[in-house]
Length: 254
Ligand SMILES: Nc1ncnc2c1ncn2[C@@H]1O[C@H](COP(=O)(O)OP(=O)(O)OP(=O)(O)O)[C@@H](O)[C@H]1O
Picture 1 (cartoon, rainbow, N blue to C red):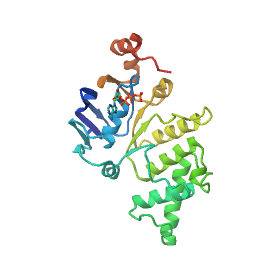
Picture 2: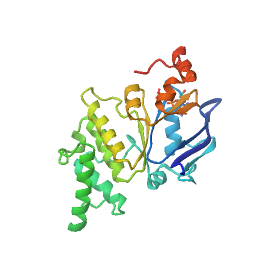
Picture 3: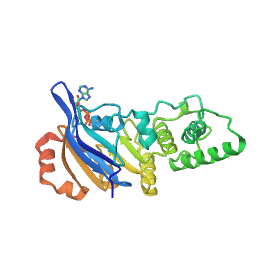
Picture 4: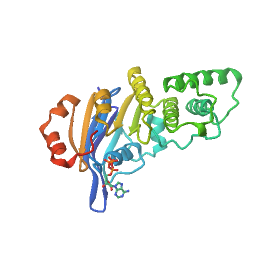
């Protein structure tokens, strides 16, 4: 089977420093992979390279076997790659429902028209409502986006990514900045999306309990290098990884 996402010796250098250094990875379709590693290991930089926010110094990024190394983030989104929490087109003064409906319409090629024909409108509205239910915002459709709590905004962003029919979902610390009460429901959202079984999810996360409960594969980044890639069980047993962790180099796993 062809990987849905692949990198080949992906490298970015800032001066002499290489936060991502010859990383070659393969992500298979409909899998859940977490990327772990200490602060500064290069995880977010790797996401920036995958999503196109940064261009590599060398190496390649491929999606479904097609090279996308030089495509803009918008073009990658159109190919089905979505990164959460970087959505710039949430309209704060529109309702939650309207925001998701516009994303559904954008995917259908009917841009920024709040007043589509009644039949189409009903179809878009129904799809928007389904997505809101997937992200547990089914009761919040009429709220203005700007009035949502932080965790709810993140759920809205995920609904909009799903509306764009994102096949590859890049989640960068989805529970960061959330109150303790907000965390379980975002975990439930991620679980539901995983259980639908039709998305490939890449997660950057420090919370090891979350990583272990979701992931089929783990990738360990260390000093910009891919130190290990395996099942969570094997990674946890790996001497190399334990050395990195126990050597005091990884002190923020919680
Ligand atoms: N634009 C940039 N210019 C120079 N250095 C950068 C730039 N972006 C990232 N870096 C450096 O790359 C390294 C990796 O940072 P990155 O944010 O990718 O790590 P991380 O693994 O995501 O860390 P954290 O877990 O703390 O989020 C850091 O040393 C950082 O200072």
